[in-house]
Amino acid sequence: MRGGIAEIDTGLIDVTGRLADRLDIDVTDLAASIQRNGQRVPILVRPTEGDRYGLIYGRRRLEACRQLGLKVRAIVTELEDDQALKDQLLENQARCDLSFIERALVAQALLEGDHLPAGERTNKAVAEVLNLTEAGVSQMLSVVRIVGDELVRAIGAAPGIGRPRWEDLKRAISDGADPALLFGTAAVARSAEGPADTVSDKAFLDTLVAAQGADAPRAPAPASADGIAIPGVGTANVRSSGRGKRLKIQLQAQEKQFVSWLEGNAPALIKELHDRWKAAQD
Image (cartoon, rainbow, N blue to C red):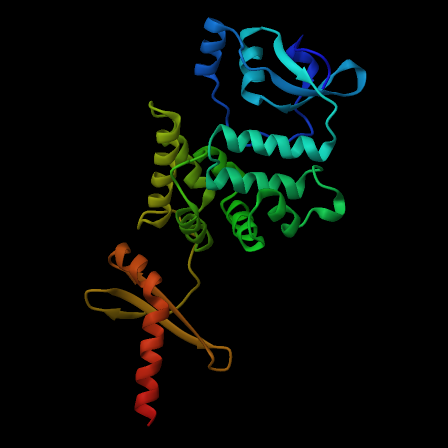
């Protein structure tokens, strides 16, 4: 550390090269507090070329001071790149528990950015940095890739929404729901008044309902027979492939709650049907 706390012009502090703030930053309340009481907690920066500084942490405090036209109080340190990255992550996780999609975006940034050496930009390395399993990182990256950055940004951090429901949205989009059209649903929900976290959660839920609902925008289904009508259930198309070892069932159910229940109980039901088949062979 260099001695003391410096007051630095915010225009001299760069955020390029650190983990990007992939979701919108709302500093309205923080800016009002700083305007009333001053900036009590300094940010942390490190010197770069040309008498400039790189931000290590304190992104919201920096943005608040920028909006107020104030110099920002900062501690200047000589941290190495890897330590700077760890401190960024630690500060974010200390400020609040990152939501599932925020952690997914951090994982994506680590893989696609230059925060890790080129040879270490792997799911395994990212899992070690974030204290996750490699499978967990793969799941996160799959959600971000299929849902897409634009729709994720439209929804926001959604702190009340965990992995299972993000997986539901990913699945609906994989089945044909159009992210470009769902963007409008999320944007309308995000325009509502209220606490940012609540509004973001509702934006996700409205988007999921639109993606899963009967009126959701979907890609045209491949041409097929009308299917088998199952009274009280819906319509099903059943096809086998893979030399008779693969069975595909497409069910258009009358009640989406049944689809959710069936999805959760499918392994047990398949096992029961297999046992009945085996018994019939004896």
